[in-house]
Amino acid sequence: MLRERISDEFDLKKQADELGVKVWQTPSFLFIIMGIIIIGAMTGVYVASISYDSPEVLIVSESIVVILLLAIGNAIITTVEQVAKANKMKTEFVSIASHQLKTPISELKWQIELLLAKFSEGLSGRQTEIINEIAHSGEKMGRLVNDLLDVARIDQGQLALAKDKVDFCDLVDDAVEAQKVFAKTMNVELVSSRSVGKIMVLADKRRMGVVLDNLISNAIKYIDTKGKVEVFVENNDGFAQVCIRDNGVGIPKNEQDDVSKKFFRSNNSIKNKTDGTGLGLYIAKNIVEQSGGKLWFKSVENVGSEFYFSIPTATNKKK
Amino acid sequence: MEKKKLLVIEDDIVLQKALEDYLSAEGFEVKTAGDGETGVNMAMDENPDLILLDIVLPKKDGYTVLQEVRADEKTKNIPIVLLTNLGSISDVEKALELGATTYLVKADYKLEEVTAKIKDLLKIK
Image (tube, rainbow over all chains, first blue to last red; front, side):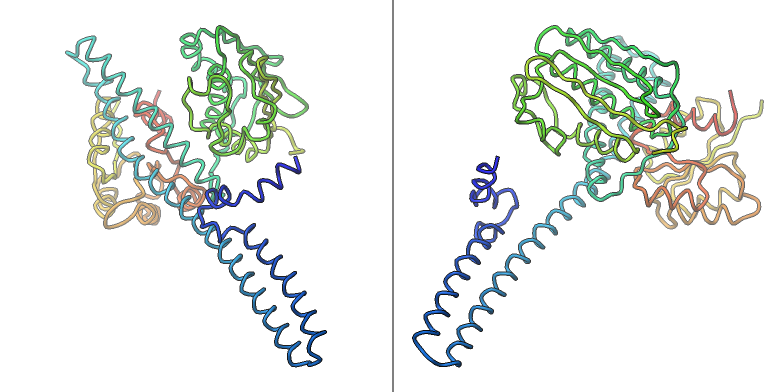
């Protein structure tokens, strides 16, 4: 662990790539230079003080050291500022680009819906099928843009969550129902059960749907061959809790700390067979946490995973 | 039953037309305005049962329209559904504070859902 950390610190090229700065601007490099200068300067001052018995020389050499250190400190601060600024600009760019994309997506979706719902007379079966495919692509694009926008909002602390009073069990039922077709095409058995009849929660209905969709579709996606996904709902001491269990490929132990990081995708056996942006879990975790709950998981590679999340019930006063 | 009158204030012609066609087919009388100023005038003249209002509009933006409609005795009680693709905390809070009844994010809602929301607000089965 420590060795990894140290070798990471010294991998200046990688660090420069990650931060988007030049190698000489990386904080680690500047710190190393600073260390060398301090040692060099102390030696210099020491040599000066024993070679020349003159306070002037001492003052001048010490001044040079201070100036050098200030210059390096300044370079470090500049780099950090530059990285922070670039990061902010990137978030703003994503936010603006997604907003711009939302208008044509709304147009596309509403036009198709209008066509199918009110002007479908005379369309052949094949024509309707094609239009449905287009609608499907539009939906996918919409979801992708929503994900990007949600990430930008999370990063800016601007994610607005509605407070709808809803039955948590209904949300789970809807999400399970919506994934039935996908499960079938992936040859996965999807079942759900619960220990309670109703759990009222105050949460953003649409976004809770996003969280559940993400977790359930992930469970289905990461099963290599025929498998089973079980969804279980319970009321756990004032919290509505759901567990999504699969017997899929699982998450390698060394990656478990990273799965809910932005853009992270596990290097497991079927990574290249499934598409994904690596944003789903990051978004899910943030939505759950902002709703006053938490999200966690247990996973064993090649055995399966259990993903849990819980949010306070509407009557929970402790939250 | 008499047709309920809706006013759609939306500058995107494609979206405006889609709303108009769909809602007309659903049995509403639909009036449209393509900018904020026309929207406010039409709200006063037509006295609609409900207003669908975009935020980003030419001449007067949605927030201004909201304020002006709410300030007039004749129109202050008309339910206003904000149609937007914004949707960050500050936008939503601002709109609700200024008196919007509710808001919908356009790219996330189907016309069917928009219609259901309108019927719900107008208490139509």
